Each structure stands twice: as C-alpha cells, then as structure tokens.
Image (cartoon, rainbow, N blue to C red; front, side, top):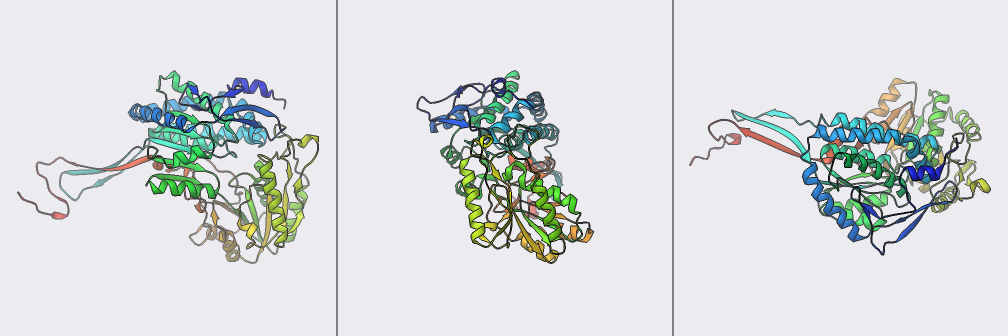
Length: 513
C-alpha cells in the first residue's frame, strides 16, 4: 500500500514545529522551550520537531482545566456522551491517516495502527452508552420515612500519562470515560510519540469547538519526565492514570499516595501461555506467535513465556521454529510484513543485552536473535524475533524485556504450570490452551492464574474494550476501559433523605432536648 506521509501529516495538522501544549484550540509554548526532533524508527527519518512544555506551561494548563471543570461537570452526562459520540465519528473519518501515523511514528504494523484507532472508536461508542448508565444504588434505611442512596460525581482533573507502544488508544480509554463522567483531562503523551497525540488533540478539539465548549476540557502537555513528576505531585489533580514501566509506576504511585490522591497504574507484564497435553497445537501456535512478535514484542500483554507440557514440548517447539522462519520483518507500512522495528536504538541495546544475560544464565537459543543490517533496516531499530529454552527462575525470565524474545519452559502437570505462570513479579495477562474443561476451570479459579486477565484458548495479547483492562502485583492493580472501570474517574457519595416530621437517630440512639 502506498502512503503519502507528508500529505498525512498535513491532513492531521502536524506542522514543522509544534508548540509545547494546548488547552484546547490554542497552542503555545515558552520562548526558551527545548526542541525535540521526532525520528521514525521505520526509516530513521525526522518527521517533525516538537517543543517541550515548561513547568509554567503545565501550570497554565492546570489552571485552565480547573476553570473548564466548573462548567463541564454541570452539563448532563448524556449531553457529554453526545460530544464523545461526535469525537468517535471524527476518529472514524480520520482512521486511515491516523492509523498510518501511529504505524510510522511508533513502528507497529499498519494493520495494528488501524486497529489502535479502531480501539479509540470502540471506547467512544462504549462511553456514549455509559453516559446514560452512571448508576448508583438505593438501599433501605433502618429509620422510618428515610431514603438512602448512593451516587457518583465527577472528580475534577484527570492526569493521563501514556506510553509509546499504544500512543493513542490508552489515552482514549481514559479520556472518553473521564469526559462522560464529567471530568476534564490533561494528557502527557510519551515524548517518543507526541505527533499522534497532537493529531488527536486537533481532532477532539474541533468537536469541542463546534459545541462552544470552554478551553481546558481537553489539554495536551508535551514534555519529559519533569511534567510527569509535576502531575504526580500536584494536589489539583485528584487522579493520575499512568501507563509504563513498573519502575515508573512505583515512582508515580509513591508521589500520588503521599498526597492521598488516586492513581490508576497500568505497568509491566510478563505474560505466559500454558499449553497443556491436550491443547490444539495449531490454534496454540497462532496465539503464541502473534503474542510474541506482534508490535515487535512491545505490548504490555505480549507473550513472554510459553509453559509447555513435556509430552507435546518437542512437537510444539518444531512447529514454532518453522513458523518463525516465515515471519516477515520490515517496513510496517507494508501490509505484507508481520513485524516492524523497535521504538529506538536504546530499545535495541536492551534487547541485545537481554539475549546475552539469558545466555549467561544457561538459556539455549533455538531461534537466534540479533540486529538486522542492510539498507532496508537503515534506522537501526530492526531486530530478529528469537526463542530460548530456559528455566522460569532465571533472573532475565523474571524481568520484562520489551522486545520479541520468547522463553520456552517445560511443565509436568497443571499445578506445576500454574505455579510457574504465577511465579513472576508481574500479573497482567495469562492464557491456557486446552480442550479439557477441568483444566480450563482450574486455571480460572481462585487457585489458578493470579493475573488481571486470564484467557482460555486465545493468547495473552490484546483485549476487548468491553472488559476492564489491568493486572495485579507489579502491574499496578489499575483497571481501564470497560465493565465498571468508570467508577475510578468519579467520587462516590452516600445520601440520606429524611421526609418525616421528626429526626430519629441511627442505631436507636436517644438525644432529647
């Protein structure tokens, strides 16, 4: 497929130098703002230059968002949902251009770029329906002629810190829900992928402007770690939703917790697929390969470990090696390729270092890795997906490497497999491949997977927006997207109404004057 990248950049309002932040339709920056060149890992070419926000820029965004919240929270939720519906439609109209930019700026395949924009459209649709279902509960009071109920109110400013691997979808999971809940948002995208964020800000703001919505409902602040730290320590931001590494999440969580704020953390994953002795091996192969090499292994739900029953281990290993020989690596804008580059050369260095650490601990590579050379790989970000036979206790296996390295481990029985599956610090996604109902139910039971996501006969990678997304342990415990994840964006209030002519006290207490 031939894509005209300069034309796409113009269509999405990506200028040569973009200002540091936007509180809506207005874009501005400080005269002394640092400038960062954004380089595509696809071909190593500079796409654009972007100014970074300063602390003063951040504070201006917060002050504008505070003012916008006063009005936005009073708009009926279904009306807010109608605006979000129009944002979803605007994303539909720009799906091809925005998906291509996601692919070019981040390096994921074009199909995955389109898929990420579709996730934004899907969560907008979900949020529209949710806008009429922000329900509370009613309960019976122990006092006569009293009514009790619970309701939810908007929190205020939601700070969103997103990662490079899903540069727009994760923002939408938060922003669409927060908006229908009556919150306003300040988004700090990854400094590695700010252009897709700029495009989304333009798309959303065009809809807000059409409805005469004040500046500040949707704010974008482009910057580095300093902006994230300001947000984490800011008492004016009651909720910070952060996606990234466990190390980053611990820092954010500690800062937000110290001021008794709320944090929604989506952090590392070390996801495993258990393949039982009665698994459908062909189905298992599809789930394992896509899970391991999709987005070049840079998904938080990427498959890192295959825990294979010893009776089918050799047969499945043979299938896996054969499949890896068919993986096409190259320009992600070419739909014939399965895998594109890593995000940058730093990621390549970490990938190579992990391979060496694995070998040092005794790992045996049955599909060798390495950096790809040649004119088609001129960006220096392309690597080979690789497979190593290991033990689950290896230090490198316990660590999440954000790259296409797949570890194979043998198991003897399901209890052994579940223990290994759970025997890592992370707890995001997990899967079992089996045709045995008892095995499936055990895996899903309280004694089974300890992850936030547990699948049967599908892989670890990817999730539908209808379910709550998130994980346990060092994954952070946060939940985004579907189900009742909306509740984290609101404050809960219990109300009691006395419609009698007296004032009875609870628990039968007497207080006569």
